[in-house]
Image (tube, rainbow over all chains, first blue to last red):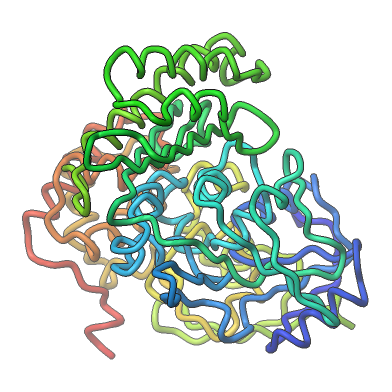
Length: 294
Length: 167
């Protein structure tokens, strides 16, 4: 038997799940898509006393348009559903663009939005794109519900602000279509692997070609996704040309302070980080409003 | 007790099974050990190699990354469900014809992945095939014959499962 022994519960309502999580606190692990937890159980890197399987809870799997033009996505929504959703493509095209890079389709068939975000692997795409989008996460518990901004949610590798007894139930993302331009790039050893370095950029450029807002998010280069504020500031108020891009690329490299590991050295990550940040900005600039630029 | 065994009812390749299973047993181990369906192979047992790929309610999934209890009420297809008795299906014949297997260890996962890919994308491009099997590791073939076998199958008639035809 691969996993160590645990008590297994498969609640059929959210209320029941939250009661179980309150009762068992830190002893409980939530099983959603299982694409991160199951490997950890199989290798006994995780030995929870209690597993609360949320897959039989109805109404946690949805992609709902919100009045502000954004989306509310149920935590149990499979990554494959997000990948195939036309409303995601319309409202947040950068999210649609990121989805095929998450592992492999067999993994995305099971893996959930909420699971990947709660797991908070620093090299994973969904935490990074939600962070870049200024997303909000709804954390529910038996007695309360709170909404946290992504910037207050990701704390360190595999660690989030989700407290004992809490469950991530919904992801709220603002619209980033129309006047928003975007770029996404990552470098992996093979298709579907975790990124050695990744970048998500979002830009607003006015009719005169001047950059009015900029968000450059890097991932796989620190404990959480990172905004590179100094590089963003270098873009604001300017027309984006080659010399600006060159400067921004250098700033991104300078600002990154990644670790070396078995996959890549710190020096490589810094160098490649600058290069792919530039590529995401070039992709964003070349996108015409409302068009995917393809 | 919640740690004790649970009764699991599943349909596998059109046949219904009911079995008592320990809650921590993976679906892959359940298929192999309890149901004696050893066509589903286990390589890495943590979701990297793809050898244990099966269809779960029609979707390709890693059976090592699910618990058997999670399959209660589900409709599964394993590699044993592809052929009609002794008659291999077109995908299997294409694997044979193109020498798309050597040791055969990855083959069940490759076949189930390719089957799911072809259901989704009936006549895939070479790039689509490469991306489709990117989650399955083969240490013998160098992949080229596998890609050829899938492309060849894609150019032919749509694949069906024997169980669907009878149902």
